Image (cartoon, rainbow over all chains, first blue to last red; front, side, top):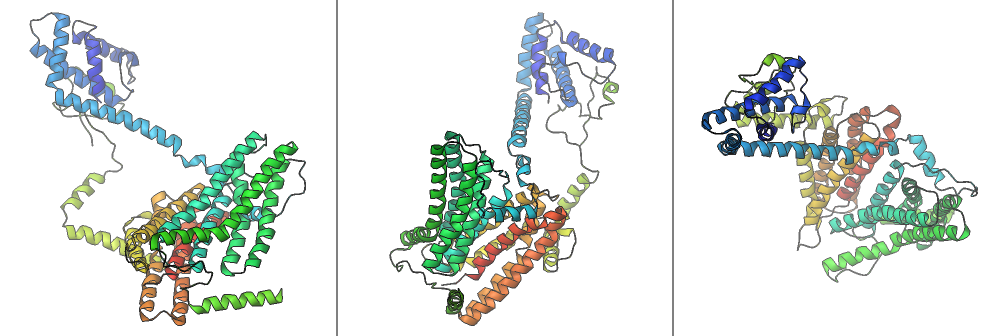
Length: 347
Length: 231
């Protein structure tokens, strides 16, 4: 607070023969104004705070006193500079403290400005402005391919639904890992699950957005995130069902049916927003391939990845990939399988 | 914190309209002059510094205990919200993580990742739910929400304790059914308790949007508890 006083004192003392003249001039400003407003022209380096001004004035007074005491019979300018020097030495610890304090204030101001600019979650607020009925409607719509592809389809740029779907997928993956396998290194498995799901959502969205930019499709990043996020609804359903009922054929039916429906919807929306056959082909082919392959990966290879991690961590004493749950007692497995068989029979 | 300036050539009347700031004559102004929030803060500091340590600890323990009671019998009271603290959540989180630790098949490195996993899931999940509820227009503050979510892990910690005791007795079919029922009941209790505290701070038509992530969060924790098998 008084550091600008030191700087201002240094600046100002060179301009007049005596500090008192400046001091008086400053005071004249105050008195002449008759108000509490400080004339900023006289300030070298203040932010306008009244505390700083008073601190600075106090500092100037002290320096003035010391100059008067120590520099008695000397010429004006030299006296001022020597006085300054002596002043700085005499006040060294205090000056250092004031400089440090000033730097802390400046740093704190900058940090809080940067924080309020970048870490402001209000930036995301419009993307979370949904009602439960809207979310439900969009979830159901994500399974219904649109017919009209000559007219750009509207995509809601909302992030609540996609975010919740990604977290649900993570939970389902954990559930799947538990039922199809064992105990252990859940730290690694948990990290893998979160990394896979978020990586897919963010990474593939960015990649398709980049391709869309190349192919001149009209879609924004938030819309792409939203579209792909809602496309994960099909994945969630498929995996939820097939992690509990272990039939390969059932999985393939779900893969083609449910996965295919949600992929078709995404593809149709993208096609409606792109012109040109080649561009449409590139964009939609890539998206369809990635989406369907991801589901395949989650169902089959994810377990292999898990097995691989477990193998490297535990050594080769693990039996090869088996789909029989080992640690959950027999009853749950038997119950599930008999239920599945009953369902298959009725179908 | 009021400081007084007494400068010789300075007329305080000029600044009388601004504020009454003063420092001692021979001490330069430095540091931060803060306006006290209310007249009671300096007195509070003095009183808690002078009391015996036992009093301080007992006061905090009583506050935590009162909040535990509020969680077990969730009524619409604002104690949890008003005087939030994070001691209870920390204690619950650490005890849950410790209890979930013994399930490692490999005794070489015992439960290191598991402890960290539970810790990270609970705190990361609570942060995400809080951000979500704030973005949906909630009026509750960040730490209040963390406090409520942490305290509502208490029923699940009790479930973990019960599960461990049941597993000591044996790990057959019956024990699985008992554990399943206990965990389900405690999961429902946790979710209802936290909903009772948090949903009030939301606009009425969006309660479902806030409850779903809480449901997911406690589901993941319950799943970890249910599938825990010691070796």
